[in-house]
Length: 393
Image (tube, rainbow, N blue to C red; front, side, top):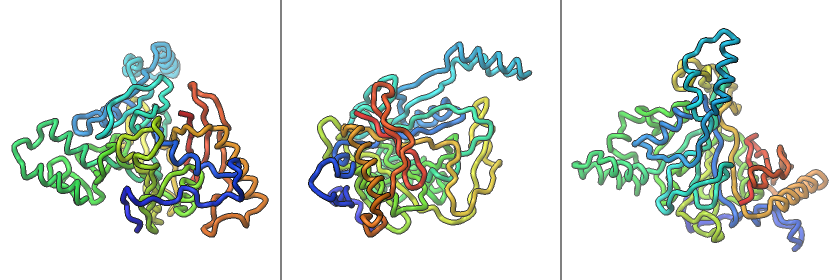
């Protein structure tokens, strides 16, 4: 396995340019030091319940931006239910329900910052979960989200702030030791009885059924990892390093860890410690289940855990939760777009120019450069089928 140290860096450009012309260089060569992982959009049946989970005193998250359902929209929904013969008292409170929210845990080296109504991350804010309400009747998280990793350092600070076990110095020392060694801590909120074999929190289940793990992490973003499943680790590595300029921090046959440069970015890009690591776990080819729920009236996936269906063996099930990853970059979006178009044409006409590992094949583009919320955005699709949105910053 590749060492997961800050000093070890891998080339962000694995396909050498044909010549010295800057226009022929792949995007990753320019994005490596101008970009950061901004947020992930997750669609959930209840934004309120999900926000409550992440902003609880155990998790210590904060809401960066939120948007409530308008009174007009609530009234329209109430009239529609009345027309359909549905008498739902919850409609009276629809105007108070959150339709979307950005939630972050903060960083050990940064202060909280505000964002515009467009909710496109500014350089000073941490990695966030963008939560968007969905009313899909049959809701499933699928199997594509492996887990969300929360920093043990953050958990220690939250416990200290909440005066948990304040008179038990041994437990505090155990937690500090676990941060250093990476072993499971013995403190109450992360004890063996309260976690399953994967290190997930059993007492405070994420309301949508997304696994949440404790992760040993250097000082930096407290949302230490966001992990997805992958069936194409090699192609995934090529895409995120060559096209998007991320660096490999750890890798073996079952896992890939990627980040943008730690504390090496331009002055206008987040330098608040170690940024969030994007993890891809090799999807194990075994029968899995996907949790479903009605997705209405605030019902969540966790509430319907017993209602599950078998997923195809060894195949990714995208479900209805994960929508896209968002990356903010100061590299001009038009330049990234043009170089990707050139790469696609090159791969179409000269496939033999690919790297020995297979190289970056044609990159699907689901959204051409578009002005949105005062930013220019570009939408790509990675080798696993995940959407990745690049936004100017």
